[in-house]
Image (cartoon, rainbow, N blue to C red; front, side, top):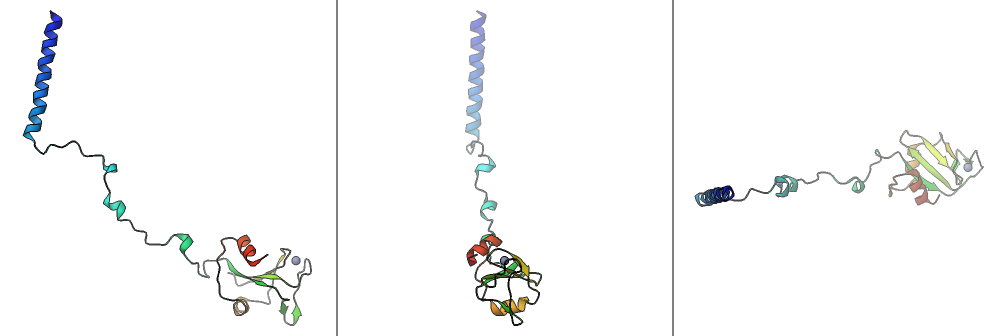
Amino acid sequence: MFGRARAHREFREAQRAGHALLHTMQSHPGFQPPAPPADQAPDPAAEAVVPDFLPPDLRVPSRQDVEGLMMRWQQPLVIDGEVRSCPECGAYRDWIIFSMCDDTIHLRCRAGHTTPEPRLDPVWFNRNSGPVDHFHPTLDEGLRHLGH
Ligand SMILES: [Zn+2]
């Protein structure tokens, strides 16, 4: 008997609950399920973000942004009337000439020996080099490009 009475009470409570829910929906025609979480809704702020700068790999570096300039010099390099040769190996042709940001000039022979050449300067370099047409992220890439 107790069991049946409890069942009856639970039925009535469920009926009341059901009625209460129905009443809510009827009284609020605009009742809507809860809005989706904010992170699923379109975020106008996110779509409005427009980069105001180019990615780094699209920027052309200026001469101030690079460590130095380099060019290949295949013929003998004559400075003050004498042929410059490598103090290490005696090579006298096929140089890579560097014009560094600190206004120094360095020579690199085919064997990879690098020596400063204080008798040359960036003015000389600019007079004898063509326009800058390549940017090399590393020295090795520049050397490879120039054939060393
Ligand atoms: Zn050398």
